[in-house]
Amino acid sequence: MVMGDLVVEVDVAVVGGGPGGYSAAFRCAELGLETVVVDATARLGGACLFEGCIPSKALLHVAAVLDEAERAREFGVDFGAPRVALDPLRTWKAERVVGKLARGLAAVAKAKGVELVSGRAVFEGSRELRVEGEAPQKIRFKHAIVATGSAPSALPGLGPGGDRVLDSTAALELRDVPERLLVVGGGYIGLELGQVYAALGSRVTLVEMLDGLLPGVDRDLVQPLARRVDKRFAKIHLGTKVVALREAGGAVEAGLSSGETLAVDRVLVAVGRRPQGAGLGLETTRAVVDARGFVSVDERCRTADPHVLAVGDVTGEPMLAHRAMRQGKVAAEVLAGLPSAFDNVAVPAVVFTDPEVAWCGLTEPDAVRAGRPVRVARFPWAASGRAATLGRSDGLTKLVADPETGRVLGVGLVGPGAGELVAEATLAVEAALTVEDLAATIHAHPTLSETLMEAAESLLRRA
Ligand code: FAD
Ligand code: NAD
Image 1 (cartoon, rainbow, N blue to C red):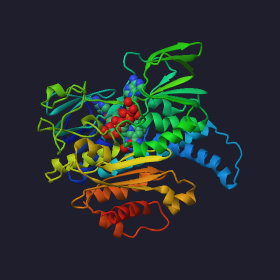
Image 2 (image 1 turned 180 degrees about the horizontal axis):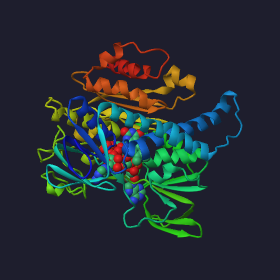
Image 3 (image 1 turned 90 degrees about the vertical axis):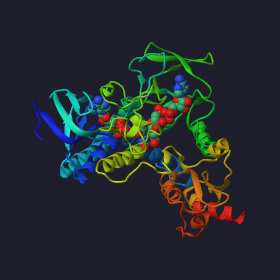
Image 4 (image 1 turned 180 degrees about the vertical axis):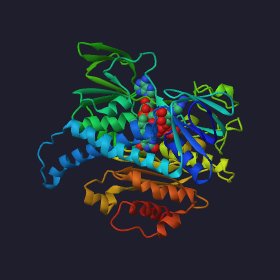
């Protein structure tokens, strides 16, 4: 392979270096395929590392420390009023967290012999890419894997709104802590980043157009989070839209569909993400991009063009990093001739709020909607010894099982650490374990994982 003005020939060209793209590239290299990754930002990590999962979780950790310190007064420990210095916080996030992981990914790429090409890639047919940027070049490939991810959606009809209106990327930069923050959207980002800014001292108002937070998620799991957010945020407007945004005298005036006007210092728009499937030149291939911008793929991550595969956010919901990573590995193995498929039964989801909300597999509301009979157990954490020692009894573990076979079909969790507990649940669903299996497995005491065993036992008692 020779880079420069010459046309480069590779086995696999991966377009996009996020979790989908780098997972695909690393696995391709392990399987002996000569691989390049083209990324517009000239680095591996994508939205997840630079403007998503990692920086948001770093800031949520800081928020949790602040909240815990405040709560410690309940058990007689007083740290005094916290003082947050934004410069060291930003440096810690950028260098010790994001930078360290970015350097790690670059080192792995080097060790595996994956070349990173900097620039924006555009398809010129089913076998060639044009790379635009400082060092324009062409790459000829036997196969390409599209992993161009997604970008924040704007508020429809309201325009960009000036620099007081932030998307998640800008909010994660933590330029300042506004006194009054309006969060538009009560989904993953609105709640996670809303909690971060509330912990740092902002007065947060949240506007959600539907009639509940985290629409589509089991209400049993959302309720404890909604109760906590109600206490931490200044106000939550459900069933409400922002219909106007206007900068006025150093503030932003937001007109709500209820007729109310709010004056705030910053607005965070978190109303979903859109796939980056358009503008890639895919029309010069046989791959199909649907009306929403998603690249259509089958369960082996293949598009309608035999030379083009696609993985990650650009291929559909749920737009989650671990789904992108699994698809990336599947795509690579498919190219190497292995019998892999993205046929996972359970894709776990975790909202890293306080309390955390996590679920996998079939949920009770989905079963009801599908008219599928299920048996459901709810184990409130008020009965968990470990939850009591943490002073956090507001959690719930919910088990959804098949009434005939006893198979665990789905698990829902809410409470501190739910995001870690969902790993056992995902394994149970994926491996087709039964309620008996969960009940008979020894769970260390005292741990929150016992709530899974207890939920299983309660189902067996009712059998
Ligand atoms: P991306 O990570 O979006 O990467 C795409 C890459 O493609 C980018 O580097 C981009 O520069 C590059 N690119 C695009 N077009 C071109 C082109 N034409 N040529 C060259 N390069 C191109 N998910 C979780 O699972 N857990 C979380 O906790 C979580 N938290 C999140 C928090 C926030 C604030 C946000 C915004 C997202 C979060 N997500 C989380 C979602 C997660 O970031 C995405 O699901 C994940 O990054 C998708 O990976 P991907 O590889 O498909 O694409
Ligand atoms: P989201 O889909 O989770 O939530 C968007 C919310 O905005 C919804 O509740 C929706 O009803 C609401 N909304 C839409 N238009 C609105 C309007 N005009 N006015 C008021 N409310 C409106 O989207 P997000 O929070 O932007 O996150 C995008 C995606 O990124 C997520 O769906 C998820 O895939 C990913 N993500 C994952 C995590 C995680 O895994 N922990 C964290 C952050 C983001």
